[in-house]
Image 1 (cartoon, rainbow, N blue to C red):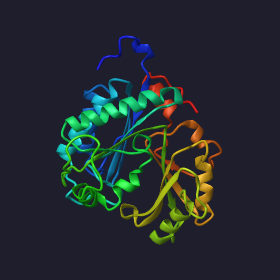
Image 2: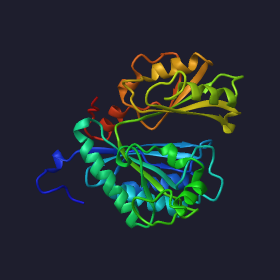
Image 3: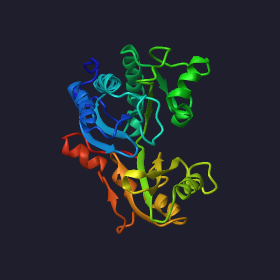
Length: 306
């Protein structure tokens, strides 16, 4: 889709997207989905694969008007290559392309992100995949509320009329599931590995304490406790930080460390540089990649606003 007539290409807002696919063990599939985004006009900034979560995250950038078509192409590729009826790991999911958020880097681009997310949902629906909106586009409905119980439960809720896809077919395939679409500011996906002998029960208890709504709840933090079998049964607190300025990652580490020592951390995708303000210098972070650096390396505008 070309830029609108009253806007030059240089003025077209740059947007990002962080589509998550329910495949983290077959690198050929992950690579093929990534190539489908690129072939349709997006820049691929980063790819993260996780065998335990059985999940991969692609970080994309493209001008408004190009990103939606790329995301729809990736949704179709994922649906063709990923079968949810096979075991899909420990991370909650309801779709082959599970979540597809369009990200605005500052508030001046929020409207563009909303428009592009709705176009993305329309194009994915037209390609034959059910789409449910979440976040601001759906009155605050959360991913967790849609994923609760997994694909089978989502199918039941749709069949019973409790939920209705916002775009696309009204019947959800158990093989490809549904795609969850949103528009949002940058979110930091950050995992914290607990030092042995911490257990899965410890990770779950700590996650319940520190997530928003918990007894020690951090605002805008979503957290679950997991066990990483591929890493010898390591207990992990897996988090999403929705406001990295309100809750810097250093504060998240401190909150978890009050209950169990943190051995190392893992960043999923990219994070704004400000998210690491005050971060402990001696704590290893796997996958450390900064949004501004990735954009600059791709020759794209690298300013990330508040």
